[in-house]
Image (cartoon, rainbow, N blue to C red):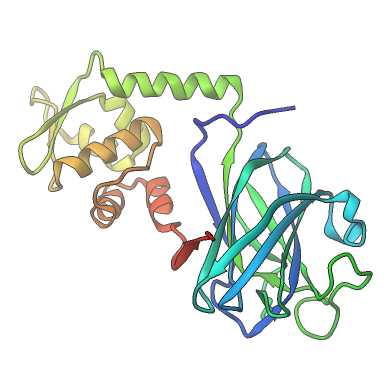
Amino acid sequence: MFSLEPTGALRHIHTHNQEITGHSQCGFLFDVTVKTFHLAITAVSFIPDTRDGEYDIWTAQGTHENCHTDQQAWTQEVKGACHRGPIGQSLRVPLPRPLNIPAGETFAFYICGNTVSAICFSTEVTKHNSAENDDLIIQLGHFKGIPWEGVLSTGPFGHNGRQEFVGSLEYQVVQSIAADHVVAATSRIWKKRLFADAELVAENGARFAVHRSVLAASSHIFDEAWRQLPMGEEPLLRMDAPEETVEALLRFAYTGYDKNIPNPAEMLKLAHAFGLLPLVQARQSIFPRTSRWSC
């Protein structure tokens, strides 16, 4: 058994196709395969093909092909998530409790609506999965017209009778005790910054005490900047960016925390300039046109 720790950074994975496709059905089933680390799924986003509908989300251990007719094998995670909005607008559904998936395991997802055109999927399958990153794979799936019936979608479209899920997942990497210690330690280093040996100066003159070794480990640009300082010169770097953005960049470099960004566009530019690729990816992973369900 393992539990979700709040220190895990929120991550996103988006499917290859993000647009309304012209194909929809009452329900869609797909599998999620976790790679190296335990994960906790916290929210599911998908695209309704209706202006008004309610959705249930079910999960099951294993692949959907092995249990799609057995309702007893499934756990209902969400009941009656409401969509009220234009066709093609993504619906984000938070899970009431995180779904913990151990490393190396596969869990099935079944999103079921109350109309025949409830959820979009894509038949323009160009890869062997719906999405993949370093943490997990969203496998290709099947649409389904009637819950728990014996037939999955087949036919000439898609990839070997399978279709692509259209949407995204939000998740966290479940922290071990050792990881919790690292997170707590880096947070203390950032807050106290004891024995700092350099300074960064924002465009308004605000100064931040920093550790050159920390910033050099986070960014090759910082590494090169420190090395190029003339011997005997004060270790100080001036940054053409607002004070709040510089502080947020430094917080990420120390702790990996990327929330409460005061100016996301400015932050993205600064992250590019200083080679902080993880921060660039985090800022670019915000799912567009997303609505949170409510009734």
